[in-house]
Image (cartoon, rainbow, N blue to C red):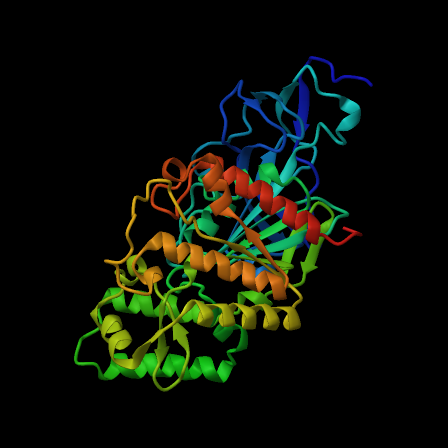
Length: 456
């Protein structure tokens, strides 16, 4: 088999189309330095994107799918050393402003391929792979212009922009452990896509201000416009009559809270821009959750019956009037593991009936290897409410009980932590380092491969 010659291979942007629009881009912004040795599918650069209607004015890509910020990341198809071309980084505001028409034949760098790379094994080796990155802001006024997926986003998306192949969609609704798994340390899906080169569309809804516990997701899945109007009116009426004057923190929190409650991400469909045009994707085929998002006590509105769970560090962002609303208008409903299991089973059944999506759940680390309790008699019962490692074991057993009756995929962080060392890699029991992240991404990739349609 022929080898790539050990000379510089020009890399071009490649095709990107949106019928009826001219695609504009900013200058190229480099993620690596000249001479960097990149791996296959590693992002090396990105630029901003915008659209211009044919014969008309500039419009946002949001006119296609409600997203205000769209970028394209560029990755080499083969490993090798990058040599950056001059004048592709325009500099100044032209690296932010979309000022040039997209030219698929534009050469932005050269690649000195690794000596063991075979040209016959890599189609279109001289064409860069494209990852589209798209974000929907919580509010238009909270914009940012620099960096990958910048600003306060209520939804982030990323996908490989390949033509002729329909991406599978993964929807992440977990808390920080699931968020880190898909977004990675660069906050833009980079590590995940480096390990999942197949056509994949990843969507993330963050856990602020509402934590995606199963009762919250069930409410969102079934909430009608009339029910949301009643929730909005209740909050408005309380703030209007409250003896505690709302401040700026209250209004910002109320707006973001209502924005999140109005959405139904499980039922969303999406537009994606591919090398061959715009394609409409149906709702997600896989939904990523974390069992760490399930509290033993959840808020339920006394009259309207909807549920809320807000993590303490997010609740701290609320002002005094919102704090008072939560205290006076909600009851705390205590949940046992059996209650949580029933909520998960109801969620699985309803999602299966409405979209056919499969749930992927990250379990809990049950031991760091440092526990030294030899006598449990001094601890209040149930022990799971007192000892985190006991509670983690109960939750993990619950997931396996569910798996005996229903189709659910478990990302077993507990087993991985036991193998590589929980105390070192997950020191607080939830947030993990790069070794566990990579292992989880491998397992997630295998699950997504199993769920891909045969014809995809």
